[in-house]
Image (cartoon, rainbow over all chains, first blue to last red; front, side, top):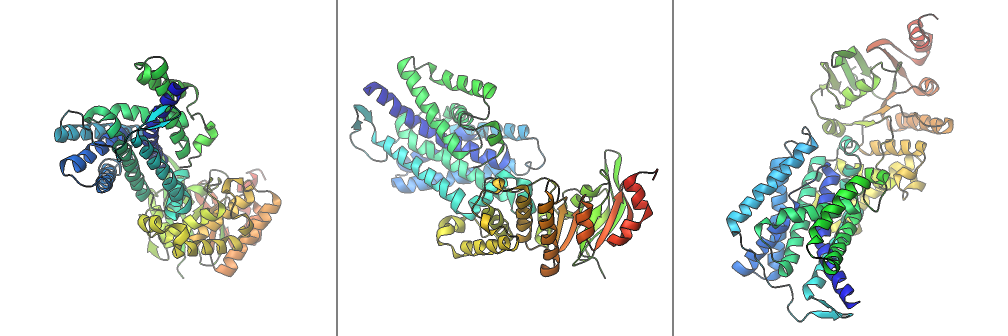
Length: 295
Length: 255
């Protein structure tokens, strides 16, 4: 039982990170119908920028987090303005997805150029002995991760249900033609979706780096994991993809713990393939619901 | 007197097939103008050209005497041309009230940051929008539905919601593509009365494409008949009903 709890909690931790990446996938998918395959690079960007602010120029933790998230949002903005916006109305979605891959390669190259190939880490948000719950050892950083993910969820709920801007964004996702006819600026909504997803992915990097370390080429695997989580939960709904993230994290951790740790990444790919083959709408929604985008 | 909305000598072809062959249409301010004709006459294409979803191969579109042929759809919406579609296009997943509020916001957006920092709870502007949205819902008799999700309404009320949403951008003219399609008799009657009210009380000009002849004859001031991409006849409902060309087009050559 203790062992199970241990695996379960570490699964939740990784899952929270996948959930944040999947969230970015979903927000962009909903407003543009494309997948941003540079999501993983934003996680790395978050970790590396955080290291720079914290360890290199010794800014306080809070300031570093804010700066990191801000810059990541700006990188998301730049990505949208430079590579997506000029083509969004005319180009095939497949071409745009390829462009996001190109952008991820570019970003990875820049990160390697700036930070080199070695892994980076920094201390967790609060130091101290790990907690023990039901015999399982839990690092304090894990609690911070949960706190931030809860905060993100609260933000999402308020943003998409209680602010008119979020509701307008939902309207664009549901039916961008009608939204345009009403005079809603859909291009602005696309821009905001890239900023938000850049920030969420980067937050994942900021939170997880003290536990796992980060190096410039960790992005692609994280992209695949986040994408698997999104498909597992079902692209279309924010809550669905976040649940998919946690589920993937827990499954991975249990498989790695009880069977073999080498199976961890294989599991994600296997799940991804079988979901796409047998239930592409995801676990939590029917295919009709999948067509109805919700955010 | 210049027409509110005018199509002048509009041609449109899709891959060599001419759908519109020099159509002239003038919609006068304050009228309900119906566009009728057999299937494939080019009615919807003409509506699309009027509100900018498609551009004409040749010809011009004027609004209040200004050439708007090259203006994109959202700019035309801001000028005051609203549009609804044949199929139901409400924002499913949003409540009835939110459907209209979003349209009001589009007319005068104040950006994300203000929205984020204040939200509905603290922002009087945002509450003001809701108040105005409620007014539109009241006008169309939908106020009792305002908290329900839009897709759960019956077809007739979804149509009215679509119109309420279109009204929220304060249009001078409403382009309606077969508003009565899929509605039952009672719903069609409510729709007809609503449209008449909008025109008489609020002074909104309406151009509608419709197959339901009872509705068309009852509420329109003028009717234009389109046949194979050309204007076959134009006149008052009475003139159209008596026009031999129109009868021929609708009933076939033999009669």
